[in-house]
Image: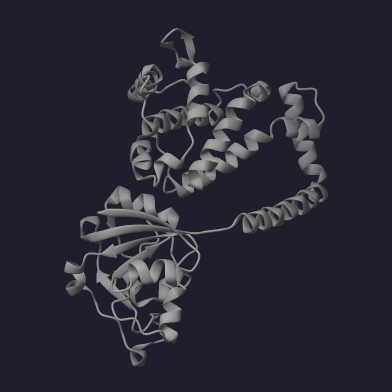
Length: 340
């Protein structure tokens, strides 16, 4: 199976004409990709397994037939139906091209006359595959992402900054007395002797970590984060070498070093069933030729323990600001991973 990553400026010229014309294929959101790779198949629409790709999913022909929705670009006629089919492409998404040997097994597309508003479909271009499609029936996987110039990125960042500033001002105005009192009680309980604003600013990295972890669990872990899933997650990263890991790996390596080539990670409070992961981390710290993928795995194993220790009372929250550098690096690494 061939894997490609394509940056495009014009979806039709750069993607459809070059790769999709003459083929039948399935399109899915980025956050469904990990589940598909883990299951080694594309399932028919299932809201318990995948987030719906489109607002019309629940009334679509494929949904009601329990079939995988596909687009048939073997005979392109550039009409209104073709334009409608292009709305199924996301700015960034994964495309699974079906082996031509499987074309005989599809449920063919419907005509304009067969279209019904209560049974949504795209005439002439949408077709279906009954039940699930195992990945050995896929010829090629293409990840497409919109190319943005430096000027476009700068304009977007400026817009985001303005929105962020406006949001911060509105947030300050909306901060009511009840929330302030709650924070003051927390400060008193922790014996911090700090003002509310100072207390929050010094611990903002923990708020960021909680938000980022939520995204990580949703996008990368199919809404259920488990340390046992790390291996499959890293194996599914495309392209894995674009994820910068050396800085945080070296930071942890130095943090847990007690002597030359001797490392102790017991402060992470590994569970009894996690000794394999603990040993893996120490082994990779000692490995002078540690691979890029293994560094990512080791870092994620440590982050899982940091997360569990934080949310299960192992860490002293009163002095958590002493670990700011750790969580700042963790937050950056997880965001880089989520947005890879």
